Length: 235
Image (tube, rainbow, N blue to C red; front, side, top):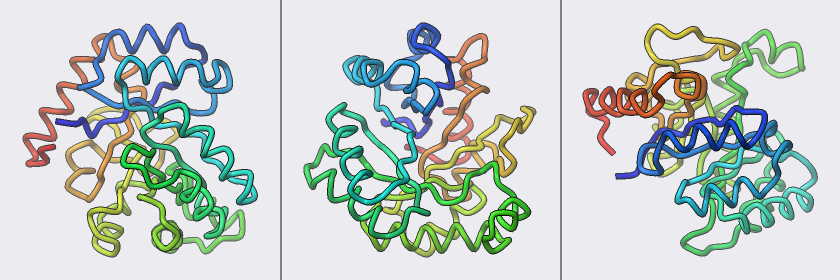
């Protein structure tokens, strides 16, 4: 059974990331590589993890003119990543160009579009000139992504249920801001526990520090798996 947990490798260099990945298995989680680690180590680390059997979500949030984003997505696909993302705020033409660049092979990477960052509140949206309602903005941007061929979106678990109802279960909802019961929210503001997130409509859960900073990451992943099974969210 494929894990629904994506562990965010929020490390500054490969040594720490590789030390962590030796403590977990490709069956227990997928891995997310973001801007800091990718900038430090480049594509070599991505390819290494793919060779070891991990599904890698390349979280670089491409946002540029359509041609530039399409070319970047095509290069990312050659790394063997399982999933990559763009910013829905780049517009429909950009999302469509990214999707077309990935082709139609059965093993192509999944393309998800970032809607509203889970660190942003309604006040933050108002500050940048958007309607001060995160939920409405997420639905609008998800609709744009869906219409232009994306496989799903990155969103808060708080919006996942509405998106599942509107666009169907096949349109993926990848949700950061997942915290275990008792953990602090850190800089994520719209957060939720694993079981509640799945019940709310999440397809995949992005978990970072609660796993990567744990003394026994494998045990934490087993705890999450048990929580999901106990909530009826079997894989």
